[in-house]
Image (cartoon, rainbow, N blue to C red; front, side, top):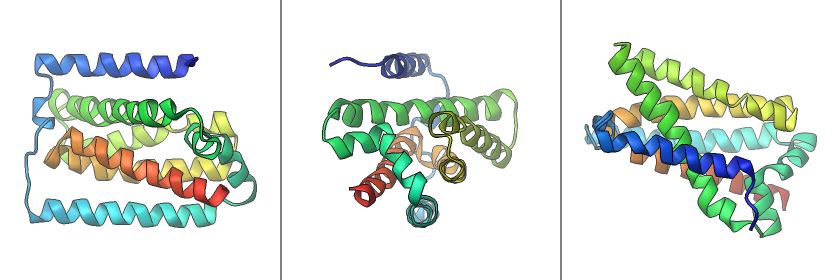
Length: 193
């Protein structure tokens, strides 16, 4: 199967991002640091909140042109056409891994350790940067509703995952990010099919 430069780049970036782990960079983000009832409640309540937010956005933001435009999103396209499973099962998770390592693991690590910012400020800055990273959606779809949906949901996901990084580690962030985004895309796919 022919793989676009986009997917080859994602694969290369993930390999590069994982490499420094072998040298002990920010290893405190690799393990569970604070497993308690509050953390578990935050994990559950935050996950449910983001699921509900996704349903609300799906209802209000993805109608008419926005709904039709989303048929061209890589993941929804794979689900609709039932081909390109490598995108769904390999490159979609690799993209989530890449985003979590860049915007949570390394960016928050730099903000906390090198710049010595407080936790709240580090989470807020990394969340804003993660949200702004999603401006690329505008260039792909040129749809304001889709852009706003991505900016809001990515900002709130980043705040949620910022706290999860500190308490439960990067692997929980990756799992949560992957699950929430897949559920969003799957719900949109069901709405479109």
